Image (cartoon, rainbow, N blue to C red; front, side, top):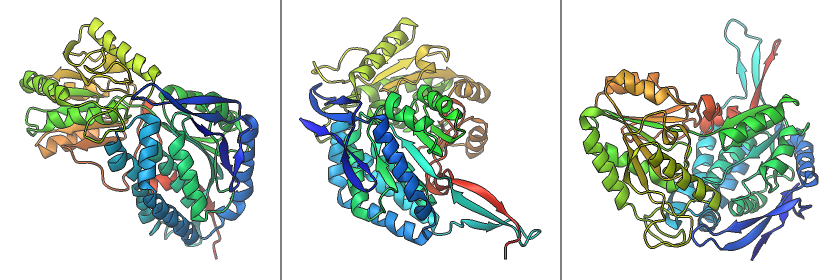
Length: 477
């Protein structure tokens, strides 16, 4: 039985003054395999104090030195890619091939993008030719509390940690208690990289314990949180009394607008993208809006593709999808599928029952609903599982109205071979990101949303700027 009862604080592994523990369960077998200690207020306070002590020196460290240390961090991370993949697959059930090809590699990719952005990043900038003695200084905000989710664990850890360190902040990381293995391995990588003591600190815990303490702590200057909209609201309220900055990257209910002139692979591409990581993606295109002229054909294609998707245990190699993360998620997703059926959506593929051949494990069938109206529960709520809702539309204006009729605003998608239409629609969609015709966003592109999806921007130059404050200086010599 694996036991994680130490935290990384001030450059050392220290025993937890634990306030409880969380049992780690293999999502493919439902068998416990370990426990992680949940930190107490004393653990959290010690980590914050270490970060506060380290901040003056780290914030004044030459950016070139910070760049060199993060590059060293990236290199060591690459050397331990297989260990990271194994950790992620075990802790949250990602199929091992996905863990190797996408999950574990995300950390070094994000760091490379940040390092590229730092090459021409000016922390001291002129105001303009009208004010030759004025400067704008971008300065690190201070101690940053970083709270990360379980679905893409090391991706989110590195998106926050690398940006904060390059900006000159010191950090306390609280990963999800459901994904502690990858974060613990990351702390080992930090320790080996030579980053000074206190600059990076790790405390495991849950939201009501360590998360709440970080959000209210007077010596924490900023909270960066990725997770549910409900939790993001709670963190914002908890942080309000201390007036700290709160940066939120929250849920989504992405619309995929498929016009009649879309390419032949548009529907299949959208279905497969919806089900990546067993649908546990905040930017999943979980609402497919299809122009009526190709609607029935698209529904047939979506059902066929969903039925062709293999399902398998997380530790087995292959292109299958794996289980969802926990019994709580498993029960919630199945309940929402049952709600979709009860509200009158047409079940095209999948359903609430376990896939054939599985009598245990948190496995959910790839499920497709057609004839969904945008007021149905499956169209309104972020399901966070392998469930796709297909909605017909007749006009461009109607498609945009349906897409925007959601509390969320993270990622939307457009499928059309008409470039003018794509550009026009992209500008009218209320979301932080729009991807069109299967083209992914470029390296260093900012990730984030609007409305109930939060307003953080992570990745590249924008990710670094999240951790900086602006100072106006006149009389520069």
